[in-house]
Image (tube, rainbow, N blue to C red):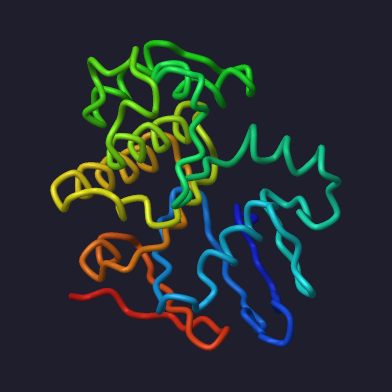
Length: 222
C-alpha cells in the first residue's frame, strides 16, 4: 500500500544556510509521527514544504501518490483544502468571522460542512458557548483551539500540526492531543506533529529528530 505521505531526498536552503539536507520519511494512514528538534532546526520548513506552501530545492514530496511539486498553485490549494488539515503556530483566523464561522470555514470550502461535527469539535476543545465571539475577543489559547477545530472539521486525511499545544496549558494540551489521536483512530487519518515536548512525543507511534538538516529515528520510551 502506498504511504499517504512520502518524502524522499528533500533539500532546502535559505540563502547560504542549508536547512534540510536529504530528508526522507514516510507516514502511513492511521499512523502518528512526532517531529522534534531544536529551535531553528528546520521543523517548520519541513511542515510548510509538506503542505505545499513552499517548494524544495531538490527531492520529492508525494501525498496519496501525487507529486506535490508538480502541482500548480491551484492544485496545491485544492490539496490543502480537501486532503490536509493544517495547524500552524500562527492561528490565521479570519478576524471578521465568529468562532462558529471560523471553524466551518475550510469545511465549507471543501463542500463537507457538518454543523453537528463542528459543534462536537467545539465541545471537545472547550469552545462551547464561544461561538458568537470574534477572534479579538479570545485568549491566545482559545484562538489556538479554534484553529485546531477548523483544521479538523473537514475530516482531513493528513493532519500537519506545528506545535499545536504550544499556546496551551498542560491539561488543555493533553486534551488537544487526545482529540488529534482520537481523530486518527476514528477516521484513519495520519498525523505529523512538531512538538518540543518529549512527554507528548512519547504518545505518538513514531518519533523523528531533526538536527543539522537530517532526520534520525528515536525509539519510543518503554
